[in-house]
Structures are given as structure tokens and as C-alpha cells.
Length: 306
Ligand SMILES: *[C@@H]1O[C@H](CO)[C@@H](O)[C@H](O)[C@H]1NC(C)=O
Ligand SMILES: *[C@@H]1O[C@H](CO)[C@@H](O)[C@H](O)[C@H]1NC(C)=O
Ligand SMILES: *[C@@H]1O[C@H](CO)[C@@H](O)[C@H](O)[C@H]1NC(C)=O
Ligand SMILES: *[C@@H]1O[C@H](CO)[C@@H](O)[C@H](O)[C@H]1NC(C)=O
Image 1 (cartoon, helix red, strand yellow):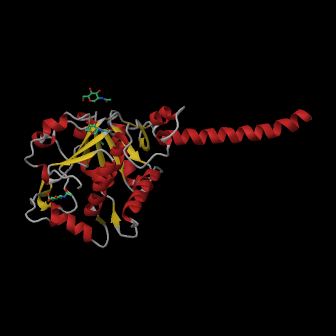
Image 2: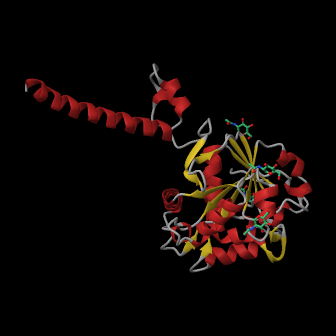
Image 3: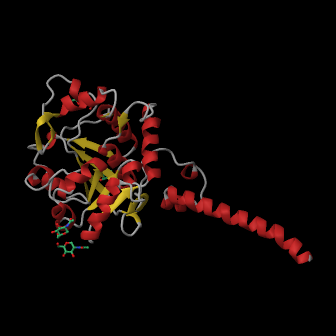
């Protein structure tokens, strides 16, 4: 009887301890594990709370992105990343070989390499794809999911299209792809991660994405994941936020692989659209700010923050 009376509080205390330990482990996972290890046994600046700056060492696992077949989180091993913009700025730049030397090469949506390798390179490590671009990949499934089956696909989209209960139209398309192309590496962005990306927009711009009637761009999702995964990021072909109002700017197509539309025309149209636009120019202002905190460089055109 007395043993039981003693055991009850001990059990209660130990379960609280286990809970706290789990919380701490969770936090360690969120933060930079190696840095934290280096911290043990020391005091002072190194152990101060993590400032909002570049994680010296990229994370390997990204649990906001789940493999559609295995349900495993995304695993990336990147150090020097190249993000290749879809912009017409890439035309004639001849940086393909330089891009191909990066450890991870990031592309967006259905941006082709075939026919453009001299300018944009031939390798693709990761392709970040919007839910609205999935049908474009499905126009050439054997190319995207068989020939280039070493590429990782990270798909982002709203819950209504990505839900996994049979009612998510884009999720259903992707399920069919992995049934047919069993080697395809396709990951979907979790609802929690989607909300996180929205919250970053709100934090950086002070505006609520939904209330301000806008959609985040694929570039936004790409940059957020790349900042977690890479030691350094070299962005090719992305203009800055003042480019389109600079005298004598270079007028190039919106996409390097699609004539007809022009980059600045599209950006200004989207920036001012009352509903349903991408805030490309606002996003670039945020990327510029991030480039000072993280290890990001922009070239073709070259620009750096003063
Ligand atoms: C399945 O894959 C085969 C071989 O690549 C292809 O011919 C066929 O069209 C695919 N079917 C669907 C529904 O994607
Ligand atoms: C990827 O494609 C190559 C060539 O088409 C094939 O030999 C290989 O088995 C595929 N890998 C997977 C994981 O399906
Ligand atoms: C920044 O990125 C460049 C290029 O990717 C890399 O060479 C350099 O080591 C990185 N610096 C730090 C502090 O991670
Ligand atoms: C932004 O781009 C324009 C046009 O290329 C350039 O004149 C300007 O200096 C750039 N701004 C910054 C901060 O680099």
C-alpha cells in the first residue's frame, strides 16, 4: 500500500520528465544540432539563443515534405546550391557548365533543360513544382518521371488540391504517377509547411497573404526550402525589386522557354492585381533582405544589397 502511494507521484514526475525530454529533443531537431553539441560544456556567446541568421550547416531531413509513396520525409545532401530562375534573363548567359558544377541544382515547374543546356545546365537535383504545373509535367511523364528519375520533385499546393482522402485532384494525379513510374521521387508539401510559408510572408511583409488576395510563387517555396538545405545559394537569372523601374532595363521574356510574354510586364501586372496575383516584386524585396542574413548571391544580372 505504501509502495503504491510512493510510486504514484514518482510515475507522474517521470512522465513529465519524459515529456520535457521529448520537447527538448524536438527543439534540438529544429535547431542546428551540431552547433548545439559544440555548445555543451561552454558558456557565453556560442550558447546564446540562435540569432535569425544563416545556419552554418544545412539540415538533412525536411519533415515538411513527405514522399508520396513511402511517407518518408525529404532527405537532401546539398552544400553549394544553384537555383536557376525560369526568367528570360537566362537566355544567352552560357552559364550551363558553371551551374552543373554545383552540388545541388534547383529548378522550378516545367522549366526545360533539353535545348537550353548551354545557358541553364543539364543536371536537375530538385524541381519545386506548383500544383497548377503538375498537368504540364504530365504532358511528358516519361521524360520527367522515367528519363530523369534521379530528380526529386517537391510539389506545393493548397489543401483542397493536395488532400489525401481521394478528393485532392492534384494528389490523385501524383498517386497515379508513382503507381506507373515506381522510380519517381515525388514529395508533397505538408499542410503545416504550407501554413508556415504563409506565416513567413506575413512576418516579412506585414500583409496577410489571403486577405491581400495573392498567391505565393514557386520561387518563394523554393527559397524557403533551399535556405534550410544549402550552405550557400547562387541564384541565376533573378532580377531585383527595382529592376523593372530602372532606366534601360533589359527587356526579356517572362520565361526563357516561352516567347510572347515579357518579364517586367508580367511582374507589374501581378504586383498590382487586386486578386489572384503573385507578388513577385514584393517577394524579391524579401529575398534581398534574406541575402544579407543568409549566404545568397544573385547573378545574371548581378546585384547585391548596398
Ligand atoms: C505508364 O508508363 C508507360 C511506360 O512509360 C507509358 O507508356 C504509359 O503511358 C503510362 N501510363 C500512364 C497512365 O501514365
Ligand atoms: C531510373 O531510370 C533508369 C533508366 O531509365 C533505370 O535503369 C533505373 O532503374 C531507374 N531507377 C529507378 C529507381 O527506378
Ligand atoms: C557561402 O556560399 C559559397 C558558395 O556556395 C560557399 O563557397 C561558402 O563556403 C559559403 N559560406 C558559408 C559561410 O557557408
Ligand atoms: C537592382 O538592379 C538594377 C538594374 O540591374 C541596378 O541598377 C541596381 O543597382 C540594383 N540594385 C541593387 C541594390 O543591387
